[in-house]
Length: 157
Image (cartoon, rainbow, N blue to C red; front, side, top):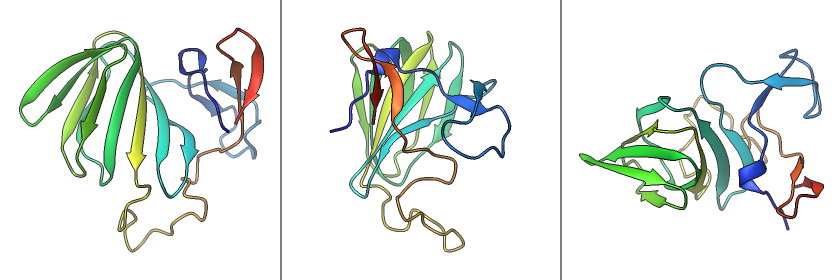
């Protein structure tokens, strides 16, 4: 079993020194653009936590997989197929493979994104080598240390 408490998950961070090895290298808060945090990755699906600041935007884009987005906190607007929806805590939205969409933070927000299957056939271009564990080169699959729902600090993974 792997477990995360999304409301208390620490924001994504960068290694203090970019080339320093290991998931436990000293880290500093990320600055600037949002940085998706891969929580779990397997051939069946990938789970990603993403923080968007108020006013920050993921411009019009698409993914090759089916995408399911859940608003964990805050509020966002999602534009797809000529429709705009305001989504707050608890909202779940699905996108068909290849469906174009844009997401904008109305308030600081945390999103949970699931892509399935991961990666879809032909996700990588012919020039890219797929990773044996279905992880991008900069991802970590190490346990995440955080607070559990009962307030206790635990290693999650």
